[in-house]
Image 1 (tube, rainbow, N blue to C red):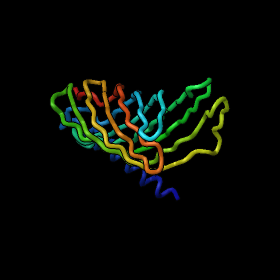
Image 2: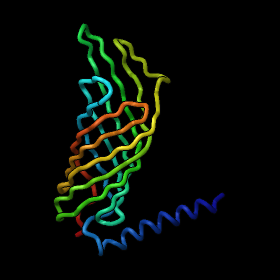
Image 3: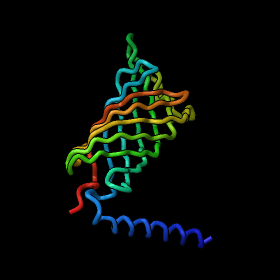
Image 4: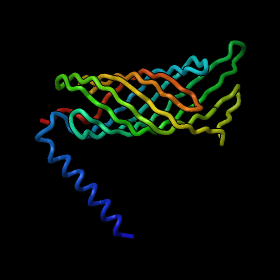
Length: 183
């Protein structure tokens, strides 16, 4: 069984060497991590308060094409009109993503992208009770998005289509670690 481990290690070493060998042809470094947060608006249910947190490592095959893995959590809270009862739902998603960046200059890059993967929703609070437990529901979905990278800051608008789950739109702002210009 050690044979496949050696092949996998060799593949990652080759990938890292080929990434560094391509720096001469690139404007931007190939690795970056995007951290962002924003506002979520669900379409199917009337939740008033919603926040979104996202972490997405990305690798650029060229200056224009980025492949990433989006890890996202959204928290939706609804308060009743009468009394102090509320509901809170947490949404978790893991999506491989693909983005195309249009490089205008080294600072300003609009992009479009798409991702597809799993969405898990779980009711945490219902009234004054914490429910949680095994009531999670996992569905598949996809997410088209548009955005703008300016230096190391990013703004994104996306819509998450979730089959049989909670579909939602989100607008996010964040920052990038890595992915800057090659000096």
